[in-house]
Image (cartoon, rainbow, N blue to C red; front, side, top):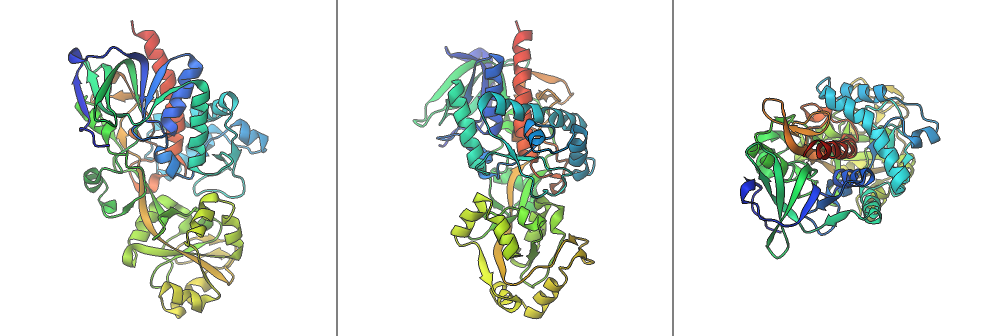
Length: 466
């Protein structure tokens, strides 16, 4: 759908008969979480989604959400705390994560997850057979499908059951504001090219970031300018464009989620759990080049710096069996991403590297700490080997509109706009200012917790507004 550039228009000129208390822009995990929370609060809303069905960045993700102190954790006997979770996030961000958002998200993600389970039937299970990098406890939650698409399907079903109005093929292009930057309505383009408008009392921007805006990526994330973009095309920077026109402040624009395990040419995400459990990345010269357990986001930059911008994920039979518990991996394997080699010589031929160099790299994978990268290994890899050719990819941005702990969008002077809220990728996240600040699951953390918070703030705004 080709639509005009995002615009803020003068509210006095708005002509619209339809009205809803809250408009939510975007029907990904953030938007639907907000809509379901508003439903529980007794507040009507309309969710406007540009695509033909609700998917967004969430459907392209693993669908894993970190949360402490949930009923699912307790049912599995897992001990965790809000403070420990917050400490893990801040440690990964090297102290750069916004403290007010860090605390807000760490505190609200558990109640948000429990509400989705108790009121809408989402059956969370905690992945307790491995730890993602940077997490001190098993707190990664998933629906039984263990995919982002499965998560979105269940959120959409919950919205349908609740009677939430989700208008698809409705790309928002206009916010109608008065001189005080209060939004009075929105305009959205339909498939026939016509623009429809609806009045509202508050807006929640849940339309994600700017990863799909090539010019913005080149300007703000130059190291990823030529990287594969594996995110959703709807991440076009609309929220930032509206915010700038409203005089809003931006923050953490250098932060993003990369991934160092995007299978080529299949174009599939390979779970980083393979690396965490003992797999290694080998470049075209047969060498390891980083500590794979530091995180998959910064691994994107490390992989792109290798010859040809590619690497090979190398693992053995035990890890292959482990990975086959992940549906996304099984799908990638079915697409031909996994190749096999009986020994190191055959693996070198597959990669196209010197066999002696590769053999030395594999020989160094032994129980204990590797001296070249500082990585700690539990065991050696055993032939036969399996390998997947991968590159580094950009998934989504972690910077955006500056918001307070209530998800209110802030002006340049730090005061909140009257009725504009932002959450998920539309707002700054809790990953600090660099790629290495992204803790596994930060994207869906800010989507679910942020959507939950924004809904409660919207309800309060409606109460406070005559």
